Image (cartoon, rainbow, N blue to C red; front, side):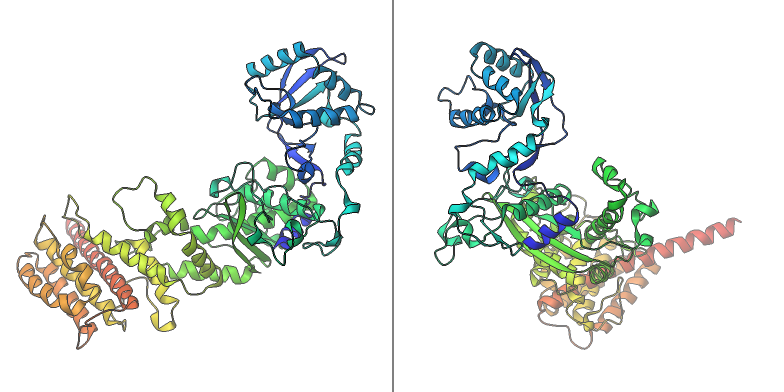
Length: 601
């Protein structure tokens, strides 16, 4: 996996040189060459490549040179103990060591020794609302010291004094396979704060507990990586995590590995499924303008759209490439790799098409299919149903993180869904059917999304479980037709008796879906009375024919108990019969309306 991130960074020129980091600078302290304080110049949101001490900080003894937090560079009046003194001394020591080459550094050091000037700077920073955690730097005589000519050459040599490579044993890098002195600690990866990570970042490689170590090896020796290689991995992760969507408290990281042909390039075509994919942000504008990167970026956009189609149900064009998918979250300051997948995009596309095809289910009018939903929204039907839940997404994150991984794996590979999907969907439907509504005039119908979960779960268990998007009177499952019969009985009561205290759905659905033989006979007797109360002859005839068809399809014997699979069939039969009845009713109304219009003509 680390090698995959490393290759991505190299292929896309994301690698920063060791000892550097892109940082956003909130303010600059402007000084004259003589050290007079001129004022505060506010920074912008554009990141600047800055020298970075990184893993060479050795605990809390060192800080970053040139650009650091305000609380480190200038003493905070509220910090009576001056906890940052060691780092502050280190900061100005670095400037003093470089003052022979950069006279501006000497000016900054002299200012740090002038209490009056320091007080004026502190007041000015407060006026500009620069906090202690904000990064700041210096501008001396109009020159930004972080952009001083020759600064990189100097820092590349100076930072070597903190590396005692000659005293450390070399080993093979886990990423590149080359001889290296492994990093003792690695810099944190940012971008996981919204999925349990820390705002300051999380460690991808960490051996601070004995349980994480092997064969009595200490720290980095357990997973040795070179500084250069790991910075490439970090650059790739930081880049990918910025735009990765969140799914059940995990970041969905993905990328491509090959270019695509021009005819499949969504950027060149200027339109992709009705969505302009030319640019998503300013970064894409700059990159797409470079001829060298146009193919790569367009392929990445198409790959991104393909992955999103898992959630939206949209179909995408052919993409002859390889995919990599990684699900990541943050746990106690560490990066948690939840899932890693790699394979052919052609196979992935086929499996996503299969997923969308198996989800097809007619809406309540029985004419068109239910609209596509995001996978996050579908997950809500796998939770226990609550009347009101202000923290429902927290519940998704806590209760479904494990099952979500299994679902994603099943979608990617076209394999079986876990049985927990069926169990949770059925529990959700039963809870829904038991609810007491203020208005009992509308017939209760199982949730479409929950039924879609059941449909896909059943269809992936074997060819004999093929299920149409609408009611199939010839289906072989007797449980399926038991559900259909229950739906007809419910519809009859709904028409014959309005505003009852408890419908037969509320009273009998749960038991009928598990032990139909015990319930359907009793419900049939009730329906005989209800049918007599329906004055509309056509409607009464429709229900009688639907009941006859359902019971004939059940066969000679109503099942006494239903297995998990049969319970799923029961729920689908119930819903699909509901849509069939509504469709027949709508067609009847439309026919009558057309006849009246023809008579008027």
